[in-house]
Image (cartoon, rainbow, N blue to C red):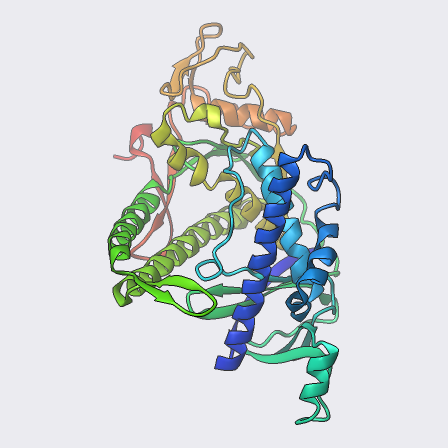
Length: 447
């Protein structure tokens, strides 16, 4: 069985855009109300224990009763508001993640995705290029008033939107969930599709073992003795970080030109036109950064999946203790896509009917892969000579061999003894827009 996501842009009319935005704003409002309830309960000694089990989710019906306008939203997105808040608190309390405390969401700047988590409940694929969405329900008074002009008006609120790309399902495929998102001014439907057909795994005749780290994305050693260094994405990340920071700085300077708007019901600041243009440019830059990282990781995954039947990778996860200085947290904790790379490898291998395994890499860096002698090394040491067996080894390749041993995969000795650095370097060639591979100059074979 295979589960995958399919993202399709929606063709939405101006009226339906307003309806989708209103749904998002109401979910944001509920999220903020639940956040206030959690903070208030915490101040009172956590008597309700809202963060335990389904207690926070069970608060939603009571808030709906006090605020009838929430009945205009389908129950699934409302339920997801509570689940997202609970997940945010769980990540905040997890000391290994170092996440910030959940904050109130802005109604205007943050679009709350509409998540329908049950099959055929709240959405329906009418045609391959047409999607029907169900929101909430009209009140009895609103229904009575609406039927004065149209007798066929139904109590449930429905809209129909077009799909720019047709979604065609095979006999073994079914849609499990749907998420409506917004990027810039475009709306997207993300279908989670489950394929029940059996995928026959190929017989494993070749494999590669990866050791993820910070100096590069990962170092791999294959069953044929070839070693690879996957070049880090620091150049790409630094470029977009610089561009995004520049746009943010210019946008923030425009806040002094915001105009105060006062109405009967609310008072707010209206951003200037220049602020809006810069904010749109900022969103566009963040979107491009995300898509380029995704493209690079999938290209790496497909490159090795075509060459090897099995992929084994360490379970390393960056933790706050590795970022000893404040300026290291951004690069090492927030932007290192190691987890995303693992999930990408897993998906590509499963899709191609090949093998994938995540391996516990505890003590793999300390241990000599030849004799097993353990010695803690400074992160700046990339190659070393074992004090016990006097074998010259690359730190990353030695760790890769130890990961392979834990996965019960023995790697050829010629691939790591006396080798100071990986033989091949793999990187993304921006000019040709594809993965490139060449001899590593430091390996002594590049001339």
